Length: 294
Image 1 (cartoon, rainbow, N blue to C red):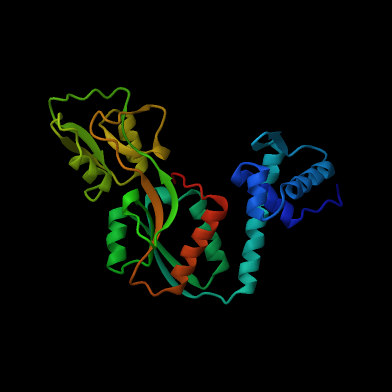
Image 2: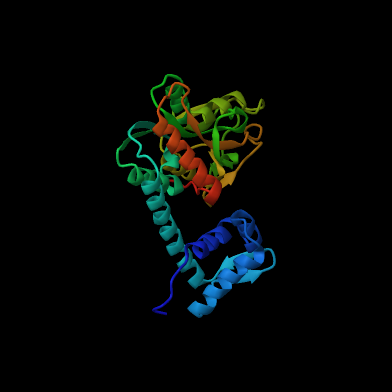
């Protein structure tokens, strides 16, 4: 065991299997044959003395030991890539004005931003958190260089970088029993909330409309208010909790799908901002960024 060394290519194979679900798709991504990837993994298993994968047709899941190695592999590869980028390109300088929505401040995006700052110590990243419509206005006015935000799928522009898609639902708590002879209590993120605007314009014609009873810019605050039975709202799939019920079609038509995107301001002339956008796109395409609630 003391002579054991981990090759970068086998660590890349392990991560690709987890990212793409099985050895075949991982091999395609790595431009290798399936047998070559299988051989790398099997050879490492023999040297370690235990299985890393639980092999089933069409799917490869990790054993407990495999999951532990996977976690280390991601950290090793991340540092490896940082070193390569840092030593093999002209250092970037300047300032990036970045806007983000609250629910994009955690998870994979946070790790990418941290890594970008470490690789480019001469770049200053000024980040602020706001609602998507506010960020969209700031982009148009040149107040920020790029934004990570969400919008309806049909609003995507040609140059937007799509990170992930999600379903949007009408939701309420199981205890919420609205009086449909009166306006329905609605929970909004703020006055500029595009969920709210869509809901107000698409309320079921048999109802007496919606009445905003809460404005809260925090996703956690909206989730708590829904769970407490304060009203109905629109939430995307990733924020639903077990004490919520989906009530699509009860208050209006099914909402359109949403997407999380990176958008660069037309007025931005910052090469560093463009570099950050491309870094996010590259990581998303390679490893599927896992957007999480902060």
